[in-house]
Each structure stands twice: as structure tokens, then as C-alpha cells.
Image (cartoon, rainbow, N blue to C red; front, side, top):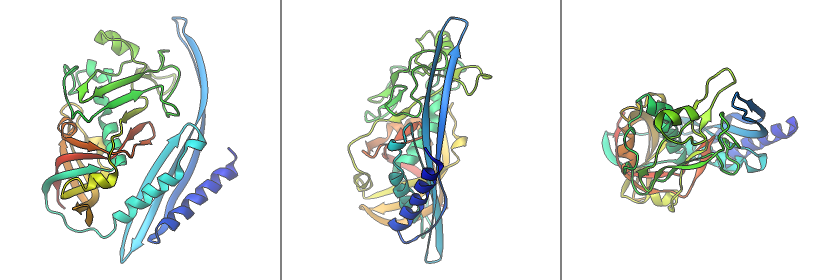
Length: 329
């Protein structure tokens, strides 16, 4: 698309953010990026293919200031076609998070029900996505080894990887080794269904390849990786999730995802959010910790929201967990 149109959309993002809430005093960044790609592959087994396409991504960082306090938050969206890039939804989420992080109060350590806002849960899923990869399986670096066919999560959990998803950022006709893209359940009704394989990890594991071979460039060897990786949506709105228990903490931001342990499943992350009591906002909390184990968390999922959204190639709705430990600060 013309540069002028990209600039115009970016300017509209900033204007729209300020229209949504008068506490938004500035926009640190508003971007729209277009990528054109072309892939050609040929190997010694006679497999040859090529394809091309485009992708669009947008990002905004909003600044809220009021009563001597300030907060900043960012939001991101992407799509294969510009018409499917919902930048207005992105701006709304950025403003929602930013203004809800104003006016922080102290918080004492406690274990309470937690709602992960959809972006926060998507980021958590992405951080733990290696536990589903064939490379981690054959190296013994995943806590899911020997758990195929076992119930590892709440029956509400349906986790998929879909290389055929319409308009998916990682939807391609073939993976890096020429295997067609496929739709796979990783967890179905709480039961672990299997790993994501490249041709190599499939052979090493005695399994079939799943169309999950990826490579960063022609200089790199193929490895297993996710395509369009997402948690299937539920039926409840975010408001219904927040009101589900008398006291609920809404996690709006998480930090330190690079520290998660894919072998044990343990995590301890920085987070910020809002404490709700009987569905009403009680106070903002910043700079605390949320800790647990990914399988215990997935087993403790009470309800799943209907507000599904993709962040790059990883998607999630908001998720209600029965209880997690929040460390005060």
C-alpha cells in the first residue's frame, strides 16, 4: 500500500486513542508495517515448491496521565491482509490497559482467583509453547514426555496449532520441508494429544510429521516450531469472568516470560492489573508477582472468555483460573 496511506492510518490511531479517554495525553509510538515475502524451496529428494504473500502489523503505545500519576501500555495486531487488521480494536485495548493501570495501591500476598486478560494469557502460552515441540521431546526438555493421551488440563482447554487457518500469520501451503500445513489439537478437552513435529523429529519419535518444520533462513537447519497457535474461545464475556467470584484479580500485563522453566513448568512473573470485588473495580496494583506451574494452571482453568484475539501467530481469549498466588509489593 502507498506510504501515505500507512502514515494516515498511524495518525488516525493516535487521534482515536485520545478520543477514547481524555486521560490519554500522548502516544509514544503508532506504527503500520507491511511485509512482502516470497519462498522457494528445492531439496535432494525432488521436492520443489514456491509461494508468496504479504503480512501487515501494527503497534501502539499509549500514555495516560491524571492526578499526578502516569502509566504507559502497548498493544499489537497483525494480519495477512490489511482489511483484516483491526487497528481500532488494538487502540481500544491499549487505552483500556493504560487507564486501568493508573492510581496503584499496595497489595498483600494472597492466593485468589485470577483472570488473565487475553494478551497476557497469549504471551504465557507462547512462552511455554516449546513444551509441545518435537525437538524438545527428543532432547528430554519437556514436562510432557510420556503424557500423550493423559488428561493434563481442565476439560475447558482446547489448544490448537493450525497451519491452515484462514488469514493466519503463519498459514502456508507447506512447511520448511515440504509437508502440507495441518490443523492439530495439542490439548483436546484437557487431554494431551501429541507433539508438533518436523520430518526429523517425527522419524526420531516414531510419529508422523505434522507440518511444523520451520527455519529462519536458508543458512539454518529445519527445526520444529509452532504455526498459528491458539486457545479455543469459550462463551463468557470479560465482565462475566471478572464477576465470577467475589474477589478476582485481572492480570493486564506480565513480565519476565523468558524465565519460565519448560522442564518443570514452573513460572514466577512480574505482573500488573486490577483487583475486583463483586465485579467492581477496587484498586490498581502494579509491580507484584504471579507464580505457579503451567500444568497446574491449565488444570485450574474455571472458564474461558469469548474475546479471542491473535497477537502475531499466537491467540487466546481471556481466561479465569480458580486460584493463583500473587506476591505483594
